[in-house]
Image 1 (cartoon, rainbow, N blue to C red):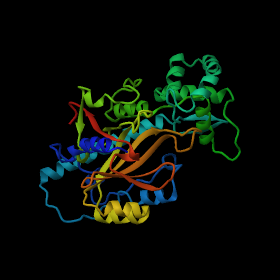
Image 2: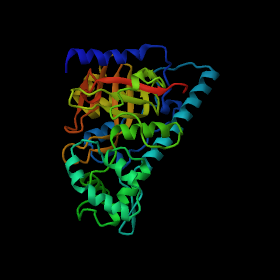
Image 3: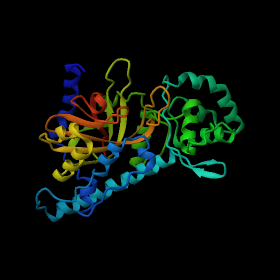
Image 4: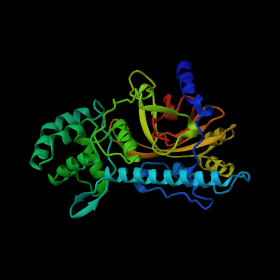
Length: 362
């Protein structure tokens, strides 16, 4: 990674000390008895035991680092902010659920997190090979052609992906697999037939749903590169990030397209939480948490790349990142090595472009 790219990423992070007020943590605002939500299996299916152990220690920060005196007005504002954040998270969970089915398979109702699909992506050839048959199957099932087209380029609405996927299931296209779950087979089928959703398609719709806005087909470009210049959006510093905000990572090379995520949660880790995460994630995490801080823990939703063969880590996933504001360093688990890594460039070593929120939104 070049120094120029690293400096550009650091410049985008510099706003962490600007005027935007830090948003109270969702968990902190809900009271000292707040507990960490359990990680659903559809979120964590491809993760390593080390990552699962790390996640088990995220958010366990009921213990305060030091007593803090706050006014009644501040306490009321924090409680309201916490309630708003929880409502946003509930809308994000609902949106993810709509993108996951349900599907009817062999008389049973099944959920399957959506598979990754990007126009020009790794499964473009197999998708093209199946296009004529896919359109014929969907026409017979009276699935609108626009749904097929959107699902094929990774930009469907949840309902469109459900329609196309169910048509394939009803046509007997679910791959065999006595040792595989129905969810896994549905996702394999989506990959083979070239349907699914890309990161921009998922993120734009999820961010809209997080605000309670009406669902519609995504309209932003594939890479979201225009966010910084979109007159309807404003940039948010890291300390002010809250559920529903969008983060864009620039492509690390000219051959890549970058990545987009919608924020599910952000909070500042306590000393006890840092110690537990360090012990769970290994030497690299311990090295990161030995820094100056403060340390922001972010949970983010997106549809992630599935490699060249449709790996189980692809499609919808909720990842957890750590950002050390003192050293401009990110910590994250790598999807391939399953190990904890750090980068001064951005999560997954992709340049951090910034976090964004619509103007007019508090």
